[in-house]
Length: 92
Image (cartoon, rainbow, N blue to C red; front, side, top):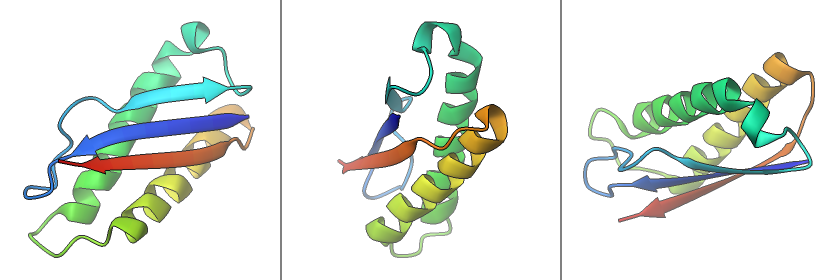
């Protein structure tokens, strides 16, 4: 399946503006997996804010790779399945 994570990030502060949107096709049925989605959203916010913290210059490619790897591992631990994780980071 595919698991798309869409996060809007403030370019100056590195903070996630709103809760990340998640689109899933062929992986889990979203209505039955609300707890998994809630944990995944929190994990995405933590990964992004860790990568942008301490005022350093943000490497957006590194951040997308970090989100992809971290969320992929997390989903495998929770479901024993490996969806294709596509992070979409929108800077504002």
